[in-house]
Each structure stands twice: as structure tokens, then as C-alpha cells.
Image (cartoon, rainbow, N blue to C red; front, side, top):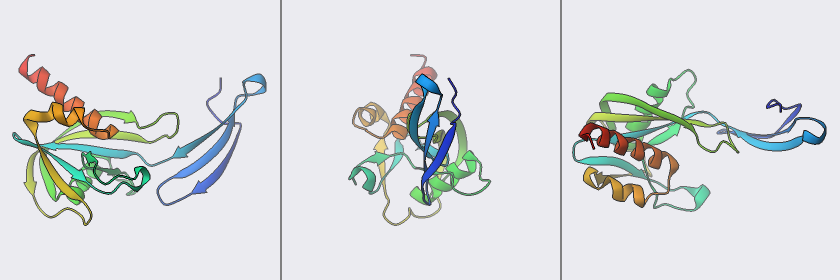
Length: 175
């Protein structure tokens, strides 16, 4: 089975992503697929001894403005590394900078639909250096209630980042 299209066309080109349609395989194995080509993304679990820093902003695609998320964004600056993007997004979305960064897992956000890969980072040693961008509300959550945040959350990057942090906490405590 070939994973390279035998035919490919661009259906839509926009500022954030491109939609493609292609034919894969041949004969009885021929199939048509559509997919989204997107820049990679980053997501940042920013926390200190007492709290996790989250953001709330309008998400028009799902019709919600109440979703709590870890700071995140697209790698849409030419030549910018995942870490540099993570630092920029944390500063833009929360007004915070971090002294210590740990690179975590990377994952495909929806492998049946897009090639977008998201890189997760932990950020600690936080200090306020500015304000959040307009339209973004910074929300803190008590770190001792990380399980409650995980249980009540519906955002994939946030869940993956928080579960990674939770696992690290368990490993550190020897549990």
C-alpha cells in the first residue's frame, strides 16, 4: 500500500492551513482521501509549586469560550524552533517567561485528518514580564487539584500535557 498520492490537488489554501485531496493506491486498492496540511504546533504546561497557568479564549470552530487550555500556538514563524515558539506563545498568551524548559512528547493532533504535530513543553521558574494578548484570560488552577482539571477538560493538548505532568509527579514521588 502506497502512502504517496498518485494524484493530488489543492482544494483550499488559507493563511493557517491547506486542504488537499489525493488518490492513493491503484486498482482495487485505490482510494481517495482529503487531508489538511498545517504547520506544527506547540503547547506549554506552565506551573509553579502552587498553580498551573491556563488560558481561556473564544474557540469559534467549536462554538465555545469556556474551554481551559494550556498556552499553545502554531509554529508559523519561518525558521523558529519548537522551543522558541513555545517561549513566544507563553509570553504572548500569559505575559509570563520561564527559566526552565523541559521538552516532552510530540503527537499528531488528528492523524486521520491532518499532518499537524504538536510539541509539548513544561515551563517552570515563571516570572511575569507583560500582559496576555487581548481576548485571552489567564486562569490559574491549584496544582494539588490537577486530577480535577484533567477530569473536567476536553482539550487534547491540555490533556496530554497535564497527564504527562501528572505522570512526572508520580514518578518523582516514587508512587
